[in-house]
Length: 292
Image (cartoon, rainbow, N blue to C red; front, side, top):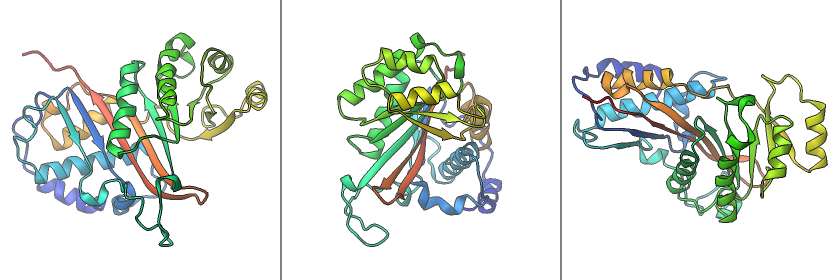
């Protein structure tokens, strides 16, 4: 769906006179495979925030057009899943690759980056379980954990409970390797000393840190850890933007008090070729309802 078509359809929607999901305290947007939605993104160099906002808008608009108004009235956990069968992640590994070669699970590598906006371990566990369940996968090859809202202010004691969750999934072979984002010394070395499974990589935002500190560069080389770079924003989507998207397509009450707690960007790549087979997003939020 192009942006122009989306705006035309939006103009045709009737005003919402009462809340669509008045009891909801949890909400999930799962885009499915966005490679099948290429027509939705007309602009080049689109930021991750703009992508998420547009995918959320498309899913909410589709819900408004197709839904029974009572569909979510009693739901406390509302899930917006892929907007059509075409957008669902293809888990048929026997499906042909671009050169018509048959694929198996071993031919694919799933990489996940979790932008966590909460320090609650339960949120991280819920996020990983959601990804595995919705993708219908038993394991993920790579998980990168980012805490963009906390940055250098986070302490080892605050972060370790989250890393223990990651280590538990590694022990269960549900995550094969995991890394962190934007960790500087001495926090990064303290984490490596304190944990059972060391991060395989540290991903640094060069937009914030113009050059990688020499001490960090030396440390990762000595400990055989990959030093990667990224250009993701400090905050992928904030409360105001998240609530604003819902407000555009739903009742004012439906948009109140939401706090996005985890955003996941994933892709699967055909191993040894670098061909992206699937990619998409999960956006999970919670809220406290006002007491009448």
